[in-house]
Image (cartoon, rainbow, N blue to C red; front, side, top):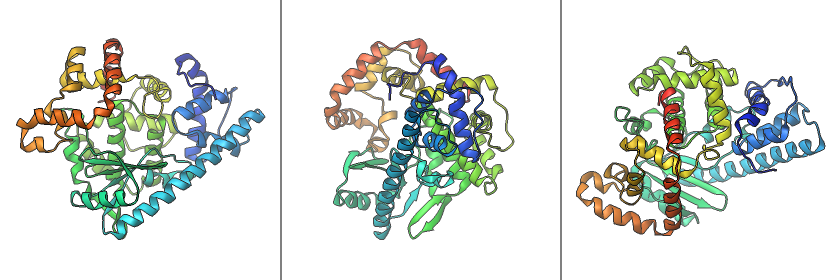
Length: 403
């Protein structure tokens, strides 16, 4: 497949066919294709957004392939996705079984749960699989993962990441690691997640539907703010609403978004879900179709996590502006070496109690990340070359949708 190069004009010619397949998949109906579709381009969109299996499945199911090449590609992408997902879920199920046998409470969220809402669950792909555990089970779970042959990829105190071959897991003691603003204390809000836990099996839990929906939407917001979010995250929310709409306490959902000062953002998400996927959402304020069309194009072009269209320098500057209000590249470079305590105290929790140890945390961080010095130097170079107009434009887009 040719290299994926997002291009606004080119993408607009194929995005309608791409979206029609996704909408039809979600609603389990035959797609209505009224004009010629560049299926290779559609697959490029799908690859960037980690959903090639779904596109292949729909083309196969409704006999839409216009050539042997597209027919072969559809079958391969579908079968490869099913095989990979079945393997990942089987591995995750075995790991969950090991953890729960050690009396470790495991709360599963996001893709592991939402996949059951998909018309074909085996087509919901995974990067990592997330588990929420209690603080007091951190050491026990860590020893079990090491004993089982997993390598620690990161040990940020609220989250440990483990890898073994194709398996990748994140163990969280907190669901959220980003506040959306000075008055939007989302980190603290999601610290009470266990209050909304529902038992699925012995020591295995998931979240109540309404709380899980709030978390899915907040998680999407985090990605939009940080880098970007692909169409799969919106699909997850659409399918979750379709699956649980009758069980969700919508009054509670609206009340919580008001508490988090995310009502405008919630209106945007519900409007997008209705406009893009034809899924009925609760009563909400409407977001203009012009904004939704623009966001759709940017969402598809940006890929799974937005990194198809936004380089690391832009992301770093966007974060600096958001956290400090400063548009200074010098300040951004300084923060790379000497981050403020506000951004380090979640990794080095001793700063909460002993803020005067900030210089020690800087040294600790440099030693821990010494193998990433080359990467950091490249990032610094990108920051120097960053187009600040692009940074400002992405900030304004966030503001338009209530973030």
